Length: 414
Ligand SMILES: Nc1ncnc2c1ncn2[C@@H]1O[C@H](COP(=O)(O)OP(=O)(O)OP(=O)(O)O)[C@@H](O)[C@H]1O
Ligand SMILES: [Mg+2]
View 1 (cartoon, rainbow, N blue to C red):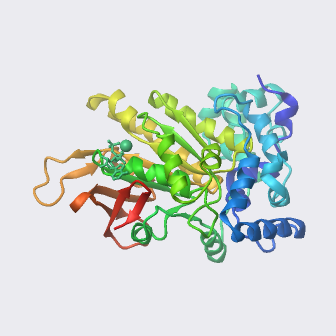
View 2: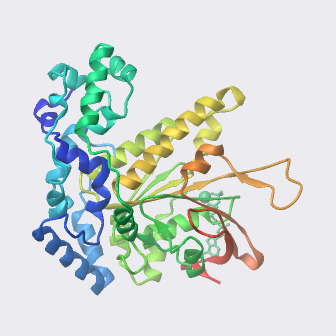
């Protein structure tokens, strides 16, 4: 049951931040005119530290980590408050919470008393944005209100929200804040526009042994490097559906770059998922982990489709599978945009019997995965043990192919 004091304090100020502006807050570059001078200074300090050497960031990151396992988490409303007060979300976040403040809480919506608010929050409608984009039917089901009240609640939520139209200049500024995590290969990075981007889902698909999991191991290291040195200066969570995390390989890769392997491993969380429902639940738990203060910058899902593929067999189950998959992908995308973090998913392939020319392999997951992944890369074995990465789909980037290799020291150029 909800802690009433907890959810009463979910104000518009914090909701806006969670839903729309967290990307700003967690970014390492400064935002002119938004944060207070104090926050600006704090950020500038952080930036300077990061430029000096890779180690300070890793130190900071490891200090920030609370060694709480994924599944031990408190309720969502409490976390929302915690997130706004925890030292890890820093001065910048607090400064930015003043933006767009309209001071409307769920309790301020028409027809919402304590009992209805509790039902709404328990049903997942724990912020105004979620309510604003819901249908009256959903609220009727969850909160037991009449349809007329549901419509009023939705309208009031919409009126209370800044729906976030941004000028081109603002969008360009945000684009500049996107951080790119290096794959380890300069050629591969160049192919995908500089690296695995924050705020987006990058999908690599390919046959067994094509290098998908090897790249994931490399990204565990690289994501933790400072911004400007091929990293995003944050921790990594790996949702593992196949039991293929090799901490000893992570250690080996860290040592190859003269990094402290124990710090790298401390800033890393691996979690095994046992079925597709569990996989979806884990994405929610990842958000709780962030709210507890884990400085997450990269989520790995390896592999995205294996549970879905084995659980939903036969044509009759396809619609249901795609619906769930859609929900899962959008939950990942939402985390990517709300928290300015990168999502790397791996995917399996199937042979297309109707292809007569060229490579007959195709990623599984259909249109849902194809459209939700921001960047799609096809990996395959090349000559002499090399690997080939082919850019299949990315906004404003030309298609192309590059060769790289997997070595004892990780992903490298040939
Ligand atoms: N240290 C290394 N040196 C050279 N090649 C390596 C090294 N480590 C792994 N490999 C190559 O990488 C392959 C494993 O690739 P990886 O596990 O990344 O494939 P995958 O795409 O994840 O495959 P799957 O679909 O089975 O999960 C091995 O078969 C091997 O060829
Ligand atoms: Mg693999």
